[in-house]
Length: 215
Figure 1 (cartoon, helix red, strand yellow):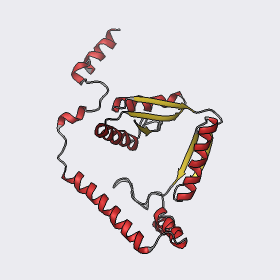
Figure 2 (cartoon, rainbow, N blue to C red):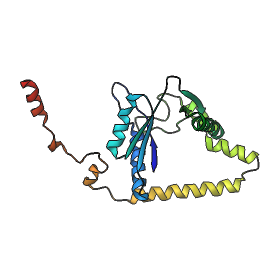
Figure 3 (cartoon, helix red, strand yellow):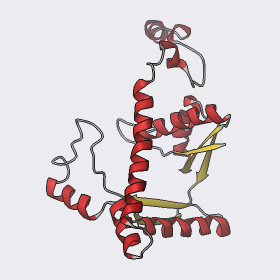
Figure 4 (cartoon, rainbow, N blue to C red):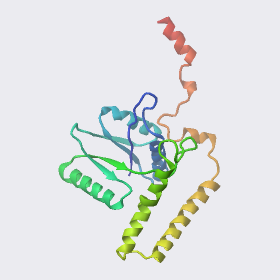
């Protein structure tokens, strides 16, 4: 089984799954097809979060689970740029879940070094260029962990260089594979849908309007 954790986004213009969660479900489904595993969508919250679970099922998830969040739900705010802070925060949450059967809402405070798109600039929109450059030099989690491990004699510069080269090659291989892959056929548009239906199976807007006026 493959568990995909998702969240509900509510607002005046956006409700349901975020684009990132839709991508997570899609990647889980692809991995599930390759490994013959089923996908379970999991979220935490009140009944209003059921909307995102229905969306996940519509995307192709086999099962959906909502963990009910009590009013006094435990929570923790963690510096996600610090590997050891993340480890400590999740260790405490896991311990709480195993021994007290209580969920924990984890707020992972992180810094995005790149924008999502051309409309979301890395700097200048909601943070200054100076702030971004400062974070990149002082809050890069990889650089911070490397410094700690090097100081503790757990990692040499040569070992880091070899690891960095290996990972970059792995990422490049994935990039090349995706870049060389053929474009999906139009029929793929209906892959992973909950129901195999088209707009031809539904009443037209005109028919619905006429029926409404008759009533």
